[in-house]
Length: 64
View 1: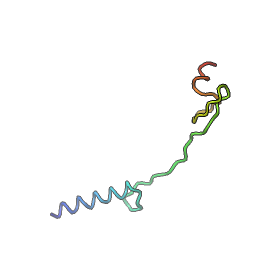
View 2: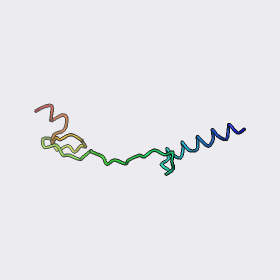
View 3: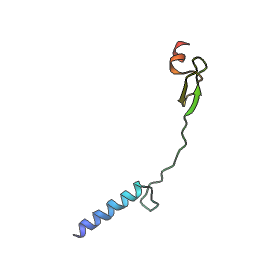
View 4: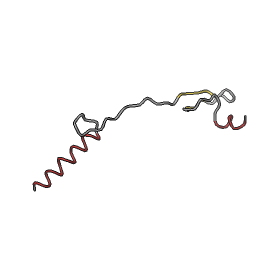
């Protein structure tokens, strides 16, 4: 019975860590801001999100 109690405590500690609770066992998870930005294609006017430094959508970029 004591072994089951140890397993339950370990599972509870892991669960708390995954839920973001601040305890000694939790992982430091850093919230990053998205690198995506909204761009309007200069050729066709399509609005899309990208993390690349471009002003054209994929279709128009391949045509150039």
